[in-house]
Figure 1 (cartoon, rainbow, N blue to C red):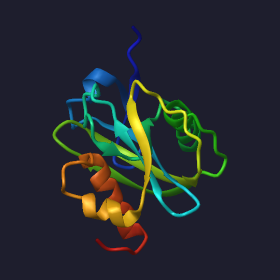
Figure 2 (cartoon, helix red, strand yellow; figure 1 turned 180 degrees about the horizontal axis):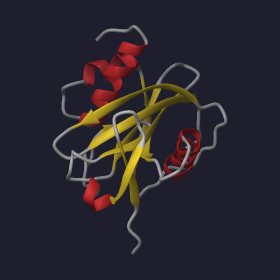
Figure 3 (cartoon, rainbow, N blue to C red; figure 1 turned 30 degrees about the vertical axis):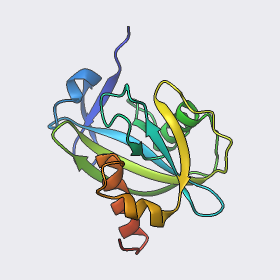
Figure 4 (cartoon, one colour; figure 1 turned 90 degrees about the vertical axis):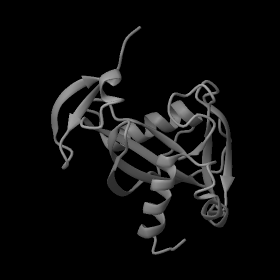
Length: 169
C-alpha cells in the first residue's frame, strides 16, 4: 500500500522538507499543513461529522465538517475542494478562506487553513471515515464544549471561529 508523503513546513508555511504520514503523526515537532472547511447551511447551522469508531484519532467524536492533509504542492482551495468531495461527496465553488492557526498536541502539529462555505446537502459521506453528519446550532455546540463528545481538534477550531466572529462562549 502506498503511504502518503506530507510537506513539513515552518511557522510561515514554507516547505522545508517531506516526511511519511506515519512519521509525522506521533511527532509533534514535524509541522504539516491541513485544510478545514466549515460547512454551514442557509439557516446558519454548522455541519459536523461524527468520526468513525475505527479512526486512530478522536474515534466516535463530533468533528469539523471537513478536514484533511494538503498534498505537497497543492493549493489551499484545491485541497479544500478535494477534501469536501472525498469526505462529503459535495462540490462547491463558494469556498472562502477565514483564518489560519497552528494546532499542536502530544500527537501532531498542524498549520491549519480554515475555510467556509454554504451547502444544504445532500451529503454522500465516506462511511469508512464518518459514521454520520448533522447540522448543529452554534448554541448547541457551545453547550457541548468540554463534555467529551467533540474532538479536541474541533473544540480548538470552534474557539478560533467564535473569536474570529466576535462571539463568546
